Length: 111
Length: 113
Image: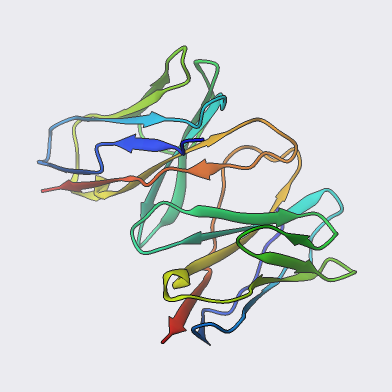
């Protein structure tokens, strides 16, 4: 699975959009971009995934650049409960089941 | 649909004891994976079960074992506990779709004294 790079930390004001970037410049054509988040000491929560088109669900939007070398997770109206570590992962369709998380981005939503 | 459940949520054991953790996957999910998460090592894969068979195994000693039942529920066992086994143990289930998305449970926090 390709390597990803994320900023270690970001702040966002409550009610504003949180835009979390991820660089995956070595991504290959059969690899998906996944986002998970983990609130302190809880199990990781799946957020969204995409291959090349932008995706949206009830939690977030995922914007993938045309060359697929980077992506942005957007939380449209951040709340205090969105404070967590966000992990961007790249996984091949036929990847073995095990996940590996990098160090992620600590998002702090400020009141 | 109910999510992945894990029991117990918290455990305190002493060195040398053994422990069994339980995981119930999302209904219909037949793949269950176990992970250990610590501040120093991050998320580490233990093993994966599918249809009662261990399909993949991480690099952990034989003290760590698991099994899966016919209803897809899974247990993991750690024998002869060591202080370094203190961690958050996570279970994740998946539907075997394409791509295959794993959904995590809340974890079991194990403290070894």
